[in-house]
Length: 148
Length: 148
DNA sequence: TATTAAATAAGAATAATTATCATTTAGGAA
DNA sequence: TTCCTAAATGATAATTATTCTTATTTAATA
Image (cartoon, rainbow over all chains, first blue to last red; front, side, top):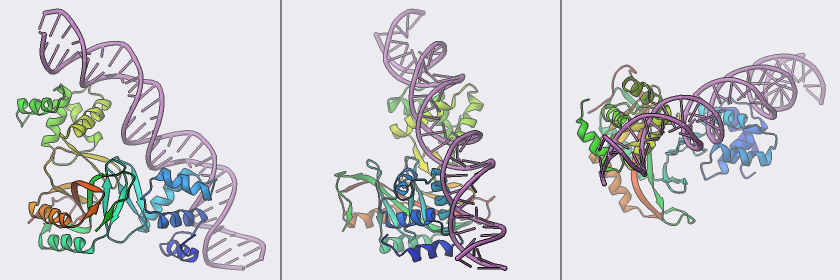
C-alpha cells in the first residue's frame, strides 16, 4: 500500500460510493498501475489480495468509478477496454504491436491543440475533452518508450 | 449505386481480394456512409441488398478490408467498433450523448500536430499515425455539427 | 465452359459483458 | 458498541459479440 489508505477511502467516499474492501483494493491498484490494464489483468491481480473476488464485481466497480469520474476508460483498436486512474488531461502513445499504452504528458501540445480549436467554430457542439492518440510501434518491444 | 461499380471492383481486386457480390455491396455501402456504422448497422443495411447474407461474412469482410487498408476501424468509448471508408488522414468529433462520429478534416491541424511531434524525440518508437478525438456533446442532438 | 482456390451461409463454439438474487457488509443511528 | 438497512458482493445464469467449422457456392482464369 503505497498511497495513503485514508486518502483512497476519502476519494471513493467523496464521489458518493461506499468505501468497500473491493473498491479500495481496485482503486489502489489502478493508482499504482502505469500499464492501463484490461479487466482480465485487474481481475487476476486483485485476486491476489482478495481471492474470493468475483469478476462481476470488477466490471461493476470499474464502471462505477468511470461514471463517478474517478478513472478513465480507454478503448483500443483491438476493442478491449483499458482503465486509467490518471484523470489529468494527457495523451496516449499506443504500440500496435505490443498493445502497450504509454502516457504522453505535454502541456505545450495540449495548449497548442486547445488554442487552435478555440479559434475554429464548431457549430452545435460543446467540447468536453480532446484526446490525441499517437499510434505506431516500439522499435525494441522489450525496451521502454521515453520522451525527450 | 452512386459510385462506379467497376471502380469498386477494381479497388477490391487491387488489394488482392476477390470482388465478390458481398464485398462489393459492403464496400459500396461504406463508401456512401457518413455515419461510421457499427457491424449491426452494416449487417441490417446489407441484408436489404443481399437477404441471405450471413453476419459472419460481415465480420470477415470488414476485417479483410481493414487488414488490406481499404477501410479503418474505430473503437468508441462504448466499446463498439465503427467502420470508416475514409482512409485519408482526418480526425473525429465524437458526441458522447448520441454516439455520432463526425469527420473533422483540417490539414492545418494535422500539420500543426505532426510538426510539433517531429520536433520532440520519442525514443524507441516509430509513429505510424496520429489521431485526434474531439469529445463532447451536440447542443441539439437532432441537428448536425458543422465546422466554420 | 470447366476447374479450383477462395469465399460464403448457417449455425456451433467461444469470449466478453451484464443480469439475477441470496448473502454479506459499510456506515449511520441508537 | 451493537443494531439496522440500503447498498455491495459472489456465484452463476443469461445475454451479447465475435470467431470458428464445414458443406456449399462462386469468382477468376485457363
